[in-house]
Length: 364
Image 1 (tube, rainbow, N blue to C red):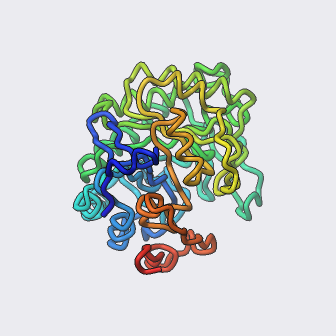
Image 2: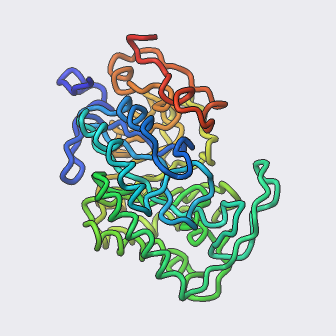
């Protein structure tokens, strides 16, 4: 099991950090990664092994995007958190992470128009049919009087997550899903108080943040934003202004962390990991936000160390590298070689292949 030591002082990613009430033993975060192994939206026992493999004492893990209601789902085997059955299924998974001393947050989402079934969105504009090989169904524009129900779904999902034992929740506002469909002006064409200006387009996101913080406390809440992404035709004409507005607006709620995705990251496509120059596009947002700032997107060991060493971020989230290397903190401590990920197995339904079968360092 990874333990921080004084010898790690020269490796910024392996230094201690206090995140609210949580004492982290290193700065390496498991990014939320859709894995499609929750059959019929119910988390499965094999997820306990998957997440506990990546858990370390004092390490932060963020679970995959999890639907807040039956209308929030866009993928048949993504997990949910809106029923008692879901809560009970998550409990042993959370327990497995906690037994290893890990800190575990659940990412909660609504996919909006990213669905092939009847879907809702900020707009009635659909995704181009055939994009990514999928025949997306046209969405229905959400009526203003329906928005409180969406907000309430997020609130109840957060309460259920805490009941399941999670240490907190991360609000999913990235990758072209519902909240981002409101935030981004390429998608949002509303004429009411939820469209038009930055303040209006951000309104539902901030209402969701407020509802969740009132329900479970701000010390258990984070949010993930990707202002620079145009994934699933969800771009914005001024992403710097959007990111900065949200960073400042979130301070009002004193949430635990802001998790932001670097420019150049779009869905599963990321910057080349051989590039060692630390990007600085998020710096104004990092400076504006008062609590913990997590950076994600295309990071490797050297870029992560540089980001922490330069105070560009407090923590760095790793996706594919952590997926393929369950002992990533240990490998980074030793500067050891890494397993390569197999993208063809990212979303297969197998409970082992491409999921729990990546070898640990001593097994490689």
